[in-house]
Length: 204
Image (cartoon, rainbow, N blue to C red; front, side, top):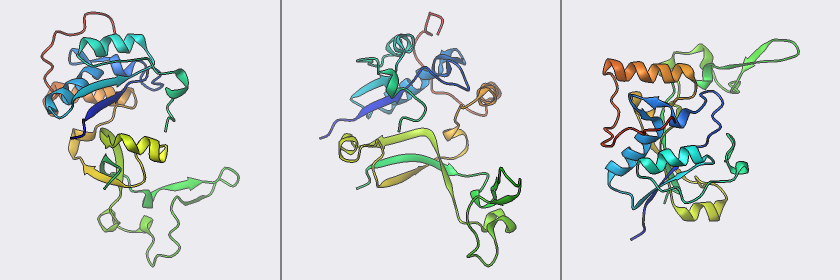
């Protein structure tokens, strides 16, 4: 039976939320909740954190994850690129059919998506009548290890959806997102996984 490894990416260079992975939310660094969720799922033989930072590595080890090595800087950028994989997606709130691009020269607009073949342009129709479109989030990604070697990507060429709803796929991409997460937890509208471990004692 093939083994399952949880691989959690935690680079140090978050540009919009500095130190995001080790920033505390409800007492623990964000990274702790990813590790604990993987542990409590009881499906993984090993939980590995991939990071370029010894500081993040120390936090990961404190919460029970393996950090076998620090990855090189060139693999720690924001652009590091049967179903081959499963990826979490959610229904978009802002449909690309209603999005526009502004020409830099004449400052006039054109639809992001070509709609010239349609009887009624998407941007002129009701949201409910538009074809369903989904956006990926960071809730889950599962792939066979063979996919990387075979395709040179981590997701492969055949992807299956894992649908999330509500706050399940909440991404923290900027300071407003972090403040929203804090408020959701404080109000009881969202619940974090319980971390049955003393909070990391150092300054993350």
